[in-house]
Image (cartoon, rainbow, N blue to C red; front, side):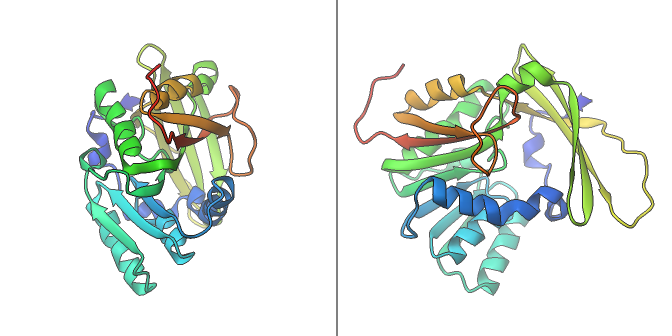
Length: 260
């Protein structure tokens, strides 16, 4: 695969993503997050890189106050329309680059789901700004949940291909790995059911900086946060080097701690 341009994340998205098979798992993901973070319904949530609001809208439907932020205008437009249709006055959506978000100790929970743009940006310095935004936006004692890919797995198992069967499409994905830069190339395509199948061709990949649990532990600690738990799926299986998915639960310390 050829890597897309470094600003790929600004122009990569359309509402066709709603047809992808993994979207069907949204309800279960939300329930797992509520249980894992021990939420009671009163929390104020920020969903960074919220997409078209599939998680944020479900949280709002359950009574949470939710703010979703995304750089893709059609996503935010669609989320606002659906929030209005559902009568969700407790859901707001902001069209913005998440690096420009400037909330200070306003949220009980911050989410970065389906990558949440973690590792998407042009340089290492830019990628770390997302963690600054997360830490600053959380109240002391607030919790963070992110769902990303595990660099330890990539180091051991890439290149590889995988597939996922949904109710309407078969999603095919391809992964490559630049060990020196810690960059994953991720490409995919969908094969709809009931239509003549064409040979899948994946020419370009999204370049994404991946992190290991140890890297994340350090990055979070430098920002006054403590990693609490890691998982590899939404059934609660512990994370490991042989699992691609990495979910990390962290807490913002109530007292400032020294950087590591």
